[in-house]
Length: 281
Image (cartoon, rainbow, N blue to C red; front, top):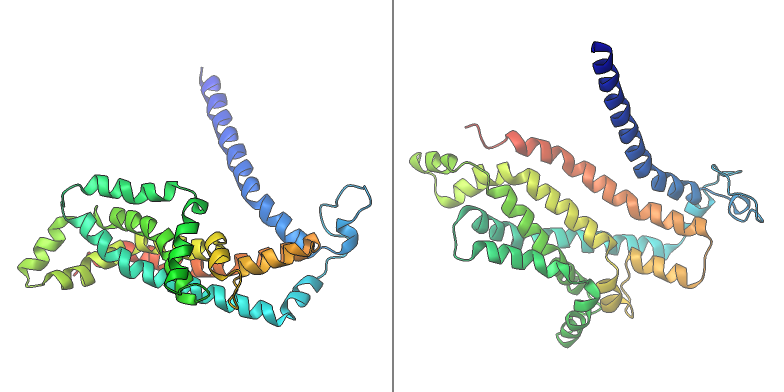
C-alpha cells in the first residue's frame, strides 16, 4: 500500500514538473524565435526549400546596425516613449482619485458603475476609433502628441480605475480611523497611508497602461497616420509596406519589447515595497 502511495505521489510530481516545463517552453519559444530571426542572415531564412535551422548559420547584428543607422528610427522611439509616459501620467492622475472614491466609499450604484466602466473595453477598438478620430479632428487634436495621449487614456482609464479600486478596497478601515484619532485629515490619510498600501495594484495598472500605449496601433494610425508624428507601430507598418525581410521585422519587434521590459523592471521594486509601506507608523 505504501508503495502505491509513493508511486502516486511521484506521478503527481512528474506531472506537475512536465506541466511547468511545458509552460516555460511555451512562453520562451516565441521570444527565442523572435530573437533568432533578428540575428539571422539571409541564408538562414531563404533556405531554398530546406528546413529552417534552429539557430542561424551565420548570426549577425547587421539588422540592428541598419536600424540604428536610420535617423527616423530614433524619432519614432522618442515619440512612442513620450506618448506612453504621458498616457501613464494622465491615466493615473484621473484614475487614482476615481478608484479611491469607488474603493473606499459606498456610493449609490457603485457595482453597476464598475461593471459599466470595464464593459466599455469589451467593444473592439475599431468600433470606437472612427467617432473618436472625428471628434479629435473637429477640435484639431489630430497629428498632435496630446491628442494621441488622450485617446490612449480613454483606452486605459477603465482598467486603471478597475485595478485601482481593487487595490484600495481591501485596505483595513481601522487604519483610517486610527489616523483620524491622531489628527490626520482625509488628504493626509490618502497620501501617507492608503496610497502607499495601494502602490502594488497601481504599479500593475501603470505597467499595463504603458504596454497598451506602447503597442497601440489603430488610434495612432487614424490620428497620426498622415502627419509628421509617427510611433514605432506606425514605423513597423511603414516597413511592412515595402515587404522587408523577416529578420528586419523581427529586429524592430525586439526593439519594441525592450522598453516594456525595462519599464516593468523599474517598477517591480515598488510593487514589493508597497506591500509593507504605510501600515507601520
